[in-house]
Length: 418
Image (cartoon, rainbow, N blue to C red; front, side):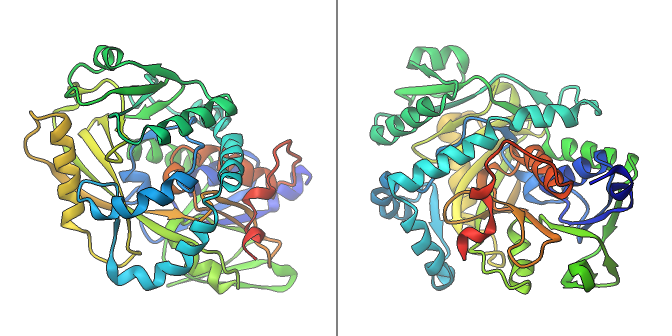
């Protein structure tokens, strides 16, 4: 695509979370005219605000794997466990869950791990390119992330470590003494752990998102705070985005609205099995001095990140769709788990529920629509939406600009579900 064509080429991006903002910024940098549309202001209570704040380039091992099949019933039955179901949502979950089970073979697990690693491996350099233009003083720390565990489910731990070894991920196994030396305030309930030294964490994800968004506006991008109702197509298959108050025609469009993307992909007649993992967080204000870096207690499936708002406790996977109310039980679970590791914690604040967009093979959808050549998708990044924001933006912008790439992008295509 030559420069003149690019300058005249307009792109509408639906969704102002980390995916949409990074995509918009990458497109602007390539000379496209970009309009970002969302019914909310960027980072307003969304997953891009409430996530764990991890930049996790090591995190290629998916949840769909053979060992999980044995664990699911006990996970659902224990109140301190990482998994929960809203029972009124079970009938809607069944088709998704059957596809998930089909993906729990060793072969499919390794396929997902390989292609998650392909993009995770270049995820942080992609952020560094975007971060060159903004002041991030005090907002990103590079101290790695620690996972630790008791002597239960050690086969699962071994599996994860071996797969990461195969992929060439940097990891450093830790003894209990080494964990204590790195994080002396955690109650010594652990028998082993691993440090991922290449990982980083955000001290305030929303502030970072807003800095990227402001840069997008400064470079000439437009933002419309409107609710997208429908996508139609004009002659030449050009997208027409209809909101609750206007219609906008573009040369190309991108759907990047996380867990809410399915409503729009259904309209364009693509049956993508996107569902929602509901994640929770609470803060313990003024306690961030207790940790130097994020930690994850694998047996109970939750993590704690030291942030500007205090200690942010995150976790639990709850399947219950977009419309069920928050579960007090899940919040209590997080609070009790945090106090188990740090008995000195007192009152928690900021009970939050957000939605992670998840596909049954645990690979995102990044690429063109099956049915419309001028429509592109970037969603379904499950627990890694924050980590993969910049690289997804780079990939989508490259596709729209018709650039060549040495990445194999076929595994992320939506056509895999047809």
